[in-house]
Amino acid sequence: MASLGRIQQRRPRADTTVLRQFTVLFLIALTLLVGRDAPPIQEASRALTQVLVPFERALTGAGTAVTSFTEAVSAIQQLREENARLQRDIDQLTIENVRLREAAIAAEQAAQLEAAGSALPYESVAAPIIARDPSGILHTVMLGAGTDQGVQVGHIVVSERGLVGRVTQAGPTYSKVLLVTDPASTVSAIVQGSRATGIVRGQYGDTLVMEWILQNDDLKAGDVVITAGLALGNDLRSLFPKGLVIGTVVAIDRSENAAYERAIVTPAADIRRLEHVLVVKTD
Image 1 (cartoon, one colour):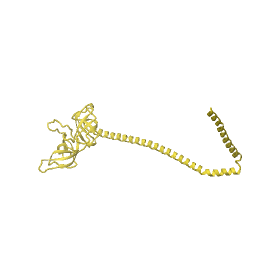
Image 2 (cartoon, rainbow, N blue to C red):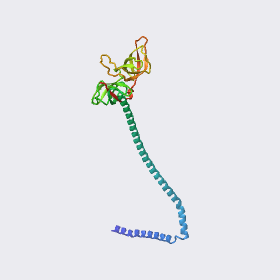
Image 3 (cartoon, rainbow, N blue to C red):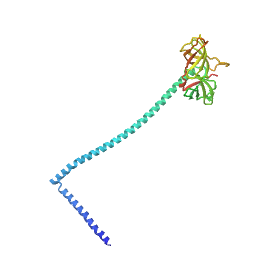
Image 4 (cartoon, rainbow, N blue to C red):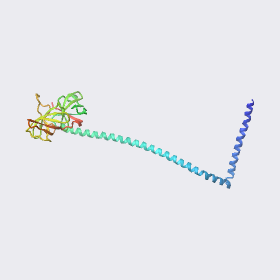
C-alpha cells in the first residue's frame, strides 16, 4: 500500500513537468511570432541561415549525386537490356542467314544433279549421303535411298562431276556404296584423245591408278579418263556404262623394260566433299 501511494504521488509530478515544458515552448514560439520583425530576431535568423547554408548545399549536392547515381544505374540497366535484345536479334538473323545459305547451296546442288541426270540415257534417283568414314580408311558411304526408291545392288553412283562408285548393299531406305577409290574397285577405262585403254583401280588414299597401259600409247598429264564400257574377267557386260568421267591423269610411271605403263589419276568427283549423288539405274 505504501508503494502504491508513492507511485500515485509521482504521476502528478511527471504531468507537471510536461506541462511546464509545453508552456515554455509555447511562450518561446509566441515570442518569436510576435517579435519576428524585431532587429535582434532578424539578425539571429540571418546568422542561423548563414550557418545552415553550407549544410543545405551539402545536402543538395548529396541529393543530386544520389539522383545522378540512381539515373546512371537505371541507364546501365536499360543499356544491358537493349544489348541483350540486340544480341538476340543478331543471333536470330545469323541462324536465319545460315539456313538461307544452306537452302541456296542445296538448291544449287539439286540443280546440278538434275542437269547431270538429264544428260544420262538412264533413269536416276537423287540420294543424300547419310554416313561416311571421316578418316578415309573405309572407302564406302551410306545413302539415304534404298529399294523403296528403286535402288538395287549393282547400280552405279555418280555426281555432277563424274563417277563415284557402285551400290553393293541395299535396304528399304538405305544403300551402301563402294567408292571408286576403294582398292577392291576396278573399272575398265579409256583415255580420251589417245584412246589408250587400261584398268582403273582404287588405292589407299584419294587417288586412282590406271594399269595395263601399253608403253607405246601416247599418254600425258592432264588427259581425261572415262569408263570404257567393257566387261572385266568373265562378266558378260560392264557394270559401268561407257562415257562416264573417272578422273584426270596427273602422273605417268614408265619402265624401260616393261611392256606396260601406269598412270596416277585424280578422281573427277571430290569424294570427301560429296553431300548428294545420283544413283543410276543401269539395268
